[in-house]
Length: 126
Ligand SMILES: [Cu+2]
View 1 (cartoon, rainbow, N blue to C red):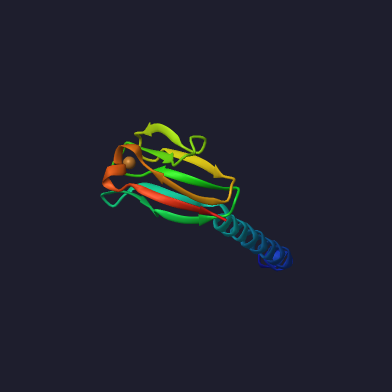
View 2 (cartoon, rainbow, N blue to C red):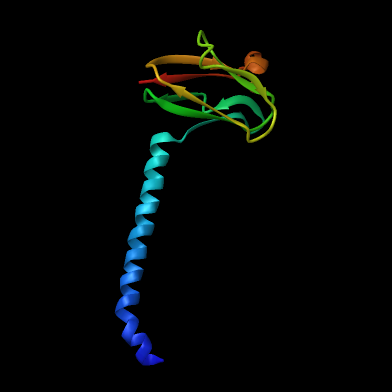
């Protein structure tokens, strides 16, 4: 038994170092992807009718994921941009809408049912 372990020790060490490298690479690719693409805006947050965050800066071509979080229903209305708006109301918690902001500029947006309560925001696209 002992001889078997000694015999395979180098092989086991080699596989363990390979596994460590692969896991590190996997972790790095996830964290880098997170930085580049995971712009999320929560709809309804901690008992308030707000977008959280209500101001973000992204690069042209980035996708923003709007997450129906609390106090629905919500929608996303972008001023003067019906093509970027998502008028249909989201009722289910966890429901999402992804919107690609292709053009540079400042885009003010609001939730139609709750604009009067201050559920508004702005997206800066660079
Ligand atoms: Cu709302």
